[in-house]
Image (cartoon, rainbow, N blue to C red; front, top):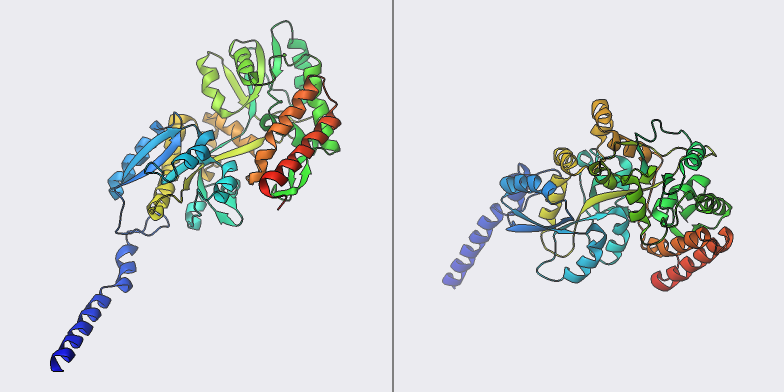
Length: 426
């Protein structure tokens, strides 16, 4: 009996000692190791796998090296086309090649959440205050935050300074200039408005909309209202009068437009910051400005895209994955990324830096255009919009349908696809 009581007493002592150095002490020990809103765990992974945008890996190397030096975790990155991230996650999400962190555009947030690919994150107000509110909001879905921004982009007005010394104030002035410049294989202003991403600015400027609410109500589609019809009639005018060549429609439209501009055969184009370097490398002295206003006085409400970093649900290293997301997206690393890639970080500090703005014409134009831009809807139902609207514009541009008829058919198809693929409107 005494031996049993002695053993029990010894066990109680052991438990007491373990409790004394247990969880109650851990927050104090780790408090000094807290970094940018997350709490370090002693169970660190040897590496994190990061999926980076194609041809952008060099911009990740400096931040990866600093993170490894600071935390002892290797960053192994792989490059993928950013438009194929969801497809690649579907293929590799349950394999040893699955990523801890991915980069995506904000319109992929809704679909990725629904499919279970990405995890919500919680960061401090201090971290969030580095970025413009619109760029952070682009990564919110059903009340939760899923990523941090690394770059913002929206189409702007890009012109050949040798052919157009001054930017017109309105699209009507640009229309008249284009009529004067169009002769044979030479053109004025070009845009790939058969692609709804690029045409949205015209639709929005005339008063139509994609979804109701905050672009998140698929039961309310505003793409065949009177304003949308007026917008498509305006777009048709450019095609009907031969101001856009026949090649600027369909699958090769982007290549045709870029080719003409790089050959000096177009005075201006609507395109995004991804095209700046390509045009400059072609020897074109480009100027960059916000889009001229429409003749109704409204701005061209281009679609705005925000690229960001996201923590996936594939690994058990989410705490450290979030730590890296906060690190790679911070102000210092974002500025380095801009210097290396030209991707424009939505940092409040840069918007308030007049010297930086004056020295970065393209970035400043994108930021200015973004004031009137509209974030692409990030709900999964947006996937059903692109093809029907492209078909609508193309059938009208080629004279095969009237605007109202084409838009009614497009919206009906969008509704049918939402019902079939998403169980109807939310």
